[in-house]
Structure formats: C-alpha cells, structure tokens
Image (cartoon, rainbow, N blue to C red; front, top):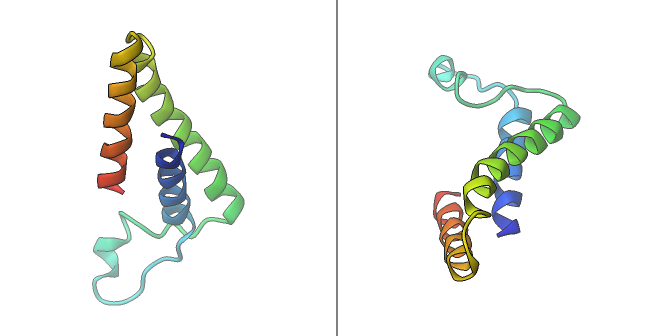
Length: 84
C-alpha cells in the first residue's frame, strides 16, 4: 500500500533531480530523464505526483465495500510493485 507511494515518490524525485545526460545519444534521452532541478523541487514534485496518483487510485477504490476494497488494495499494491 503505502510503500508503493514511496516508490512512486522516489522515482519521481530521482527523475527531477538527475543531472542532464551527456554524450551522443543524450538528445533523445534528455526529453525523458534528467531535469537537473534542485532537490527541494524534486521533493515537491514527488509530493504532487503522489497526491495525484493517490487521488486517482483512492477515488474509485474507496467507493468499494469491505472485501472488494481489500482485494483492490492488494491488486493496486502488486501492480505498483511490478511496475516499479
């Protein structure tokens, strides 16, 4: 559950704070990673992204009843574990 959001936040923070890549292929990679922002902006971006993901996951999930909520929570946790 909560460890999945830690993973999303850590991944987001790393993408925002990595230095810009150098080399021949850097032009293509530069659009996906390496924004080279200060750490505090990376932490804030991670908090915003985690909040958005939590809202998108929580809004439909919290409308479920008891057992279905538990099953959905386990399914979401496993999905995050496999992706990250």
